[in-house]
Length: 284
Image 1 (cartoon, rainbow, N blue to C red):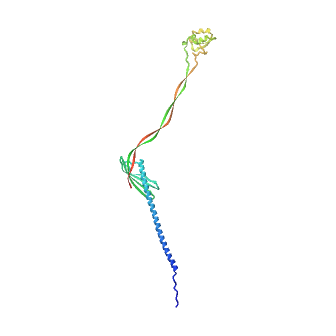
Image 2: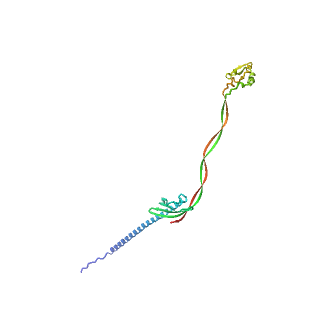
Image 3: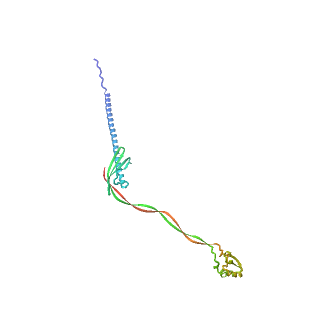
C-alpha cells in the first residue's frame, strides 16, 4: 500500500496574508477619518468666515448710527416739521464694507424731536441692520466768533510852500499933480553938484512929447513954472513913459496830500443758534 504525502499548509504565507488584510482595513478607516476631518474643517472655516462677516457688518451699521448722531449734534443734519423719510448716507465706504442710513421723523416739537434711525452695514454678502430711536433735545447756543473787518484809513499831510506873485507896474503920473521943479530932492541934489542937470520937459504940457533936456544950473529956473517938468535922475522921463516894472512878492500856500491805506479791525460777533443734545432711547 503506497502512502500519498499530504502537503502541510505554509504558516508563514498565511501570516503574511492576514497582515495585509489588517493593513488594508486600517488604511480604509484612516482615509475615511481624514475625509471626515477635512469636511468638518472646511465647513468650520466657512462658518467662521460667515460669522466674522456678520460681526463686521454689525460694527459697520453701528458706525453709521454714530456718524448720523455726530451730524445732528453739529447741526449739519437738521430735523424739521414735515420732513419725509430721508436717506442720509448711501453706500458710504467704511472698514472694508459700507453702510446706508435713513432717518424717519417720529415726532417734532419746540423743545425736542424724536426720530428713528436705520443703519444697514454690508460686508460681502452679509448685512446687518441697527435701528435706534433718538430724542433730539433743543437748547440755545451762543458763541462769540472772532471776525476781521478791513476798512480804508485816510490820512492827510499838509505842507506849506512859497509861491511867487508878479505885479506889473505901468502907472503914468498926472503932470498937473506933479510938484514944482525946485521943490524936489532931485533938484536940490543936482543944484548942489557941478555940471548940468537933466530935466524932463513937457512941451505944452503934452505927456506924449516928453523929452529929457541937459541944462546948466542957470537955465533950470525957466522950467520952474512949467507944470509937470521935473529933474530926472535916470536920464528918462520914466514918470510919463514908464518902463514896465515887475514887482515880485511871495505868499505861502498850504498843500494837502491824501493817503489811503487798508486797516484791519479785529472784532467779535455773537452767534445765536439752536444746539442739539442727542439722547438714545432704544437700540436694537
